[in-house]
Image (cartoon, rainbow, N blue to C red; front, top):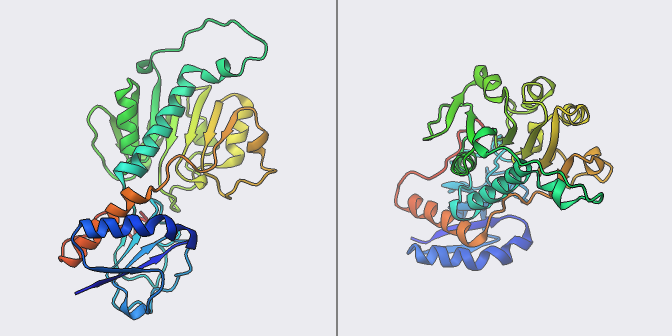
Length: 311
């Protein structure tokens, strides 16, 4: 029986995904019809972006699963009309590798003090070597697929890494803490903090005036996770006081970041335009195809979202 797959995302993405999705579905030996429009009652799977036109899932009476193209699901997880499994995008080939490269690059940039050498208009000769990575404690908030991969890479580079998550995780070589009562322990004395938590009511403003004060003076903040994880005003105050030496931010509460936002002009803030990690169509298509294959064979889907937890 042919499985009908609706591609529900911005129209310009169809040109990028059509060929890779067909190739991945064919390689998986699946008999599928893939299109951007089809009668709702005939749809078996929706390849989905939360900013698509599809917001009411009730008409999709034959639907087996919604396969998200993004790692983040906060834009759809609360949709009460969605009553089938929602699978987030976990793509180790593309999404995860891209995040690992971005995070490790910016952590190393701050660790080595590269900015002072790249931009040095006064030609200052200041031969002060950075500490070794083992003497620079790093905390990674969030130990999902992306956070765990970044924590492992940073540990491999020699950093003393503490990971914190809401539920228990175990990663070799990394001190793993979990639960609200250990967050302060995870942050206390950290010289670098990397935020890779999902955006849920319990994680919003996880970095605020109180938690920023726990970091080592002159710490670095690196946020490729979600903009709502940081209290912007508290971060700006910590930057002005020197409690935080620099913040590299890839995500924001409003995107694109408004041109008059203080982050743009602050000398201790680096803004990157939500590029830390992007879904790559060829590898993402293979993830989608594997979940369709599982659904057609009655196997459990991969990366199913816990609706109560929000991720």
